[in-house]
Image 1 (cartoon, rainbow, N blue to C red):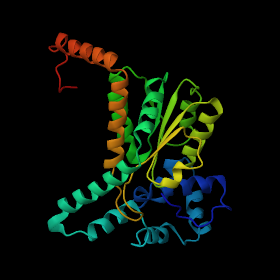
Image 2: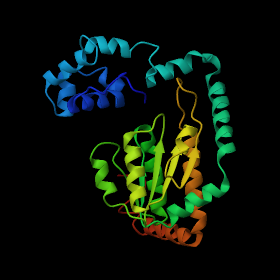
Image 3: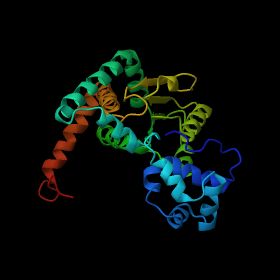
Length: 280
């Protein structure tokens, strides 16, 4: 996510809150009225209305017109740009070719020893905290579902705001934190790295920009190729990395994992009549 406002240095706290919301959810904002934005953020409609002029626009309509400009790289524009360069008749083949390139680029930069190190940190942790904002949330849920079966304690952290601090207040040096950082380094990611560093908690970072891997306090960092700037970003490579981590952790505790999965199978058989699979 890139900044939609050139200079926010003069923004008030209320204006910064509005700007942050717009930058996080540009597509959603396109269909919201000033009143709906105010209600969402717990502020007044007058504050929202004044914001547009302070930000350099006559009103919300003028800002939305700029946001719809094809030159602005919103996710919708990225997807349109990617599709426009493809022959509709060969879309599946082109997507497959792109996926192969992303996977190869990612595989070339993942070292087995780093994968083992990350798996060791997570397997040996008292609790694994996962920060998976936006579309990466599905990866967090997959990790939680699979690793909980292995007996690991997984906690999905809040995506933004003060609720994130509720999790960070409980992080200790005996835990591990896994952070997905795509497109840009979020303030929340910076806070997580700082808090984890203060208590000596190891951090595993997964990023789609190689520069994110350098200059941070993360113990292990991975690069996953998701596409060039300005085009649709695939989630295939981070999914591959997640599955590699799951399998690596499972192999480290093979006997215990198999015992737990065996017990799960027993429970399914014992309560099959009361809790049949496939039903809520």
